[in-house]
Image (cartoon, rainbow, N blue to C red; front, side, top):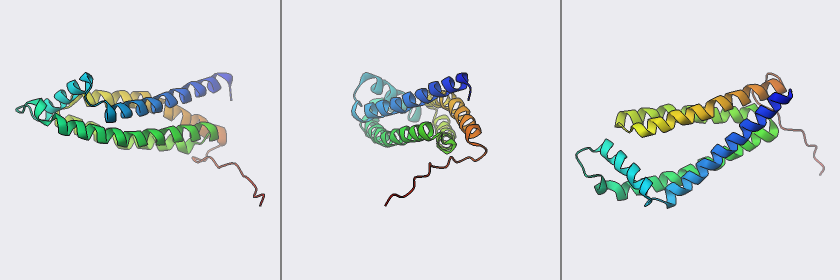
Length: 164
């Protein structure tokens, strides 16, 4: 492995750790910071997109509850993402990068479709940004680690003889 590809790998892995930790921070905020002004503004935007004829404040308590629930779910996703990044990094396991790509590609089109159908354009922009910052590094790491171990899409775990 060349020095430049080794350095790029370290940078991309660090980026993915940062993204996973960012997801964790945002998800904690979504669960516990529901009364912050930025959340109120976001909920007003979503409320207006979903029910232009209703006053946004009418449904904000329910929206805050759903946002907190989503935040709690996203917290577990963040930990799963951290675990896969860690496994992909330490084991140089292409399957970890492939699993993360599969998760992103399962989530994004559905989220984008629902956002477009509901007229919540801000979510579409968040989703597009997520695709742009996640897929290229994941694809590069998958290809890089796969080349390093051969053509198998799954990196074998190191053999540990039983000492018992």
